[in-house]
Length: 290
Image (cartoon, rainbow, N blue to C red; front, side, top):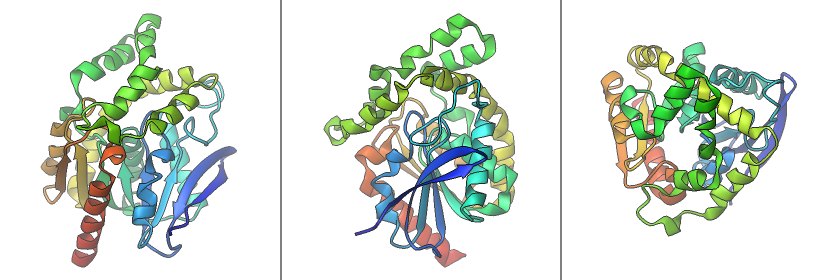
């Protein structure tokens, strides 16, 4: 049985919680979670990969068991989340890694790669967007409107995304059999979202999301020039990030492997074994060709 450690380190005065398993001298897999979850979303994937890899999954600031200062105490931008993650990696002595990015984990991961391209030796994107084709208009239009107009009305229009119905929907939409999704997953997220000040934290990050689109041309250039190995394993029925966003990776990484799976946004909840098998097979193939 794999032992998973639950640790906390201080990074620039902020507590960063992370899960870690696997041999200390093994290649590193960095797992970067999305909204509204935390490293909790990787609770089953970590043991599945830790036999041959050192698997590390931090909680972003404001999420999970990491520090969650108020919006007056911390600049909640994706650039700031990435800076803390980079400092976290330095603190625990990680200099090279393959990153698994999902949802919010993607813009954090892209910033890490652009800041230190030599550190990233592989990319696994699980519904982690990097292309305009990936945005589903019905979901994203209110977010773009708030970022553009910055009014109380456009901000308040996003508040339902913090509620039970929206959070549960993120886990269940696009899943052929919703009974395979553990309700504890969204109950865990809802409990953390209910903390005082969390509405301001999350609404501030929603407003900042447009900065991630501005980053995409640089990400595409990095993919082309680095020729970093890429695995795209995607819930094809995701109504947040469309499957077209998965296929778009091959434009800048023609060597990328793209696996579209009959699931939704949080693919690990319903298709863990398929995702884990795809990752292990791809990693082993990448090692043989290196």
